[in-house]
Length: 79
Image (tube, rainbow, N blue to C red; front, side, top):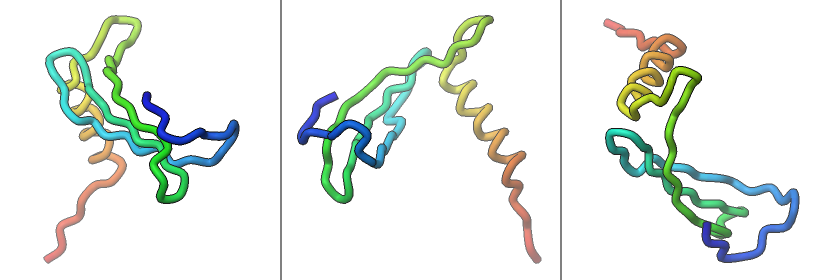
């Protein structure tokens, strides 16, 4: 994480996170922290989804999220 401006303790900030890409094992993300319209910090991370039985591939995780969203927000087709 690169801090461009100081962030006070308990300051309200907006965190924007985007999955930029993934491979067979990891998600790669970019993070931007804003206070109002000012960029306060930016950084990148590598993420792995794990459970007690082992790790999940990014594609498995994305498919599970898509199924969850479809169940929670089914699309209706109107005539």
